[in-house]
Image 1 (cartoon, rainbow, N blue to C red):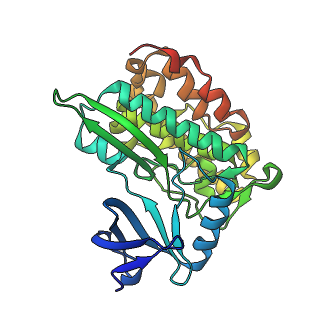
Image 2 (cartoon, helix red, strand yellow):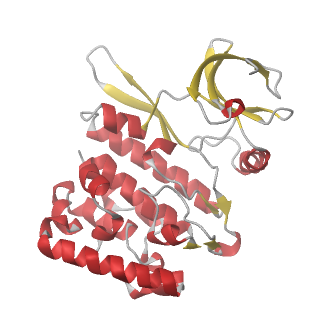
Image 3 (cartoon, rainbow, N blue to C red):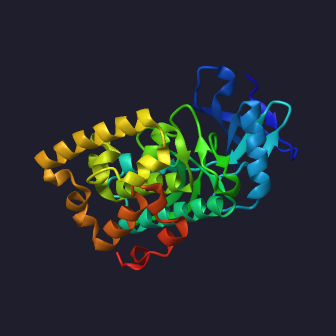
Length: 300
């Protein structure tokens, strides 16, 4: 393994430690140091390298998207700013992390999605471990978030003219994907909003329900619009069967209903997240509507 990398800028990145070891050793993600700053050195396959170059061209200077800042074309290596934590790490390791700072993180993720959607890009893998966070604690233990970025664009895609993406496989992480992402049919910007809605619920304390139950329990029944959107006989039958099972579960345990267990989040949060997790993509709120929702103006 090569320890040092010379970026396109001429800057030298010296390996510090392995952050993520993959099956193929050459694709291990490394923490690197250069001129007393830390970075992430990520070897990638050629298709993703080219995709990253396209994204860097369209979103140069972005403060909300984790775009690479240097590269080595010969070895297909990308260099990213180093972040201290992920949203997943914060929620799992620090249950008392301030609510105001959690809300700040969510706001900046929303702005990142807005930036992508403004140029017809769909992330397709919005989840807590793809949200990078820098935060600090002062001498009194007060924690403050300084930087947030949405990263990992491995399966991102540009939706020319708003055209839905169709694939023969599920798109995104199983825990956070939308219903249409599960089928691989009709993935649109609304799919990102659904995933972001789940991330919001998780961040605000609903993780126990999301991790123990499936997204189908967020609604009473699957709307006809989703069946039309997916437009696949086998998947529609599977979703109808799943909806029937979910209905029986909710009938037996009414507390599983979203409107029941989300009450502690407040009416504004309920309203915003219900719109984000609408099972009919055509009725989902847009990211612009999400960011102008009254919930953001509520005092903590």
